[in-house]
Every structure is written in C-alpha cells, then in structure tokens.
Image (cartoon, rainbow, N blue to C red; front, side):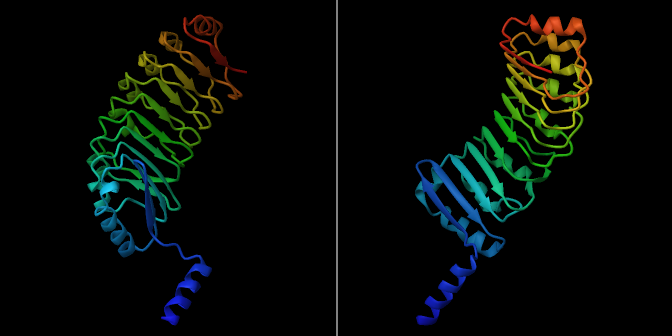
Length: 246
C-alpha cells in the first residue's frame, strides 16, 4: 500500500498526464494521452456515463492525432472543439456525428479527409491551423453560414466557393492570398468578408454583387490597388456600414 502511494506521488511530481473527462451541463471535456490503451479505457467509461451520452458539446484536448473510433458513438453531439498538442487529422468518420453543426479546431491540422461529408454543418473554424491549401472539401458543405480560416498559409481561394450560397461570414485574414476569384460574387448572402493582412493586388468588380454585405476588411494589403469604379460601387452597397482599407 505504501509503495502504491509513493508511486502515485512520483507520477504526480513528474507531471505525467492522465486521460480524464468531465461532464458539465451538456458539455463533455475529454483529455487524452498518447497511450492508446488508456484512451480506449477512458472512452469506454464515457460510454457508460448516462450524462456523457446526452452531451451535445464535445471539447477534446491532450496528446492525440485523431479521435478514438468509439468516441463517434456519442449520438447527440452538435458542437466539437479540438485543441491538442499533435498535428490533428480530421477523418471522414466525423460524418458519423449526424447532428454536428459547429466544428472548431484550435491546433495544427495534418490532414482533412476529402471524403468527409458534413451536409448539416453551419460553422467551421480552422484558425491558425497551418493550412497551406484552402480545404476544398469545405465547399461541399452547403449549409455553412460561417467560415474562419484566418491565420493560415494558403494563397488561392478555390472557385468552388461559389457553391456556398448560405454563407454569411467569411474570415480569411492573415494568409497569403493574392487574388480574389470572381466567383465570390455568387455569395449573395454574405454579410461579413475579411481579407486583411494578405497580399491582394486588386479585387474583382463582382464584389459589387454582394448587396447584403455589411462589413468588408481589406486593410494591410500593402500592394492593393482598388479601381476607382469598383471603389465607388463598393461604397454604394446598401447595407455596408464598415469598409476598412488603407
């Protein structure tokens, strides 16, 4: 018994992380380690917890590169937040969360499965995730109303973005974007567009089609030149209350 206590104290002093979870209201917070057996045991405990099974908000932390497969058995999850210490891979298995409408990732993303289907997703937040390419798979999620991909490293916005007709907010600041595709003019429900701190050279006249636009951020694009005709057109947008440019 005394040896067990001494061993426990030694582990605590060394700061060895232990997998754990807690449930607060409808939120379940899970911290994993790099020990797969311990993580599987933790998930097994979660699946026996009646409160955890009813949770709608899942917060994942710790030292994992993907979600343990049995965690997808939580059927009521509508919101997921991921902040782990390893580069994280977003698997197509995330599609098993049929009610998922919000996905936030606060860490480096290693890979996003191109087969991932999230037709019900409304908000995606991949900010400061080290993305070198705009993830085209996002353009297959038709109900998206908010996208935040700020603080990454990509330079091209795909033309497929025109498919996101429900989009209201598009945050792409602090990337390496040089050109805004004319297809952005198809986002007729867009209310907020942030392209600050990029490398834009000009902007397309199609931006004038965004009649619901309320906020437009173009500041800190050092080489940006906005044609006078486009500038007047943007300034004349009926709902625009905030237009920020250098």
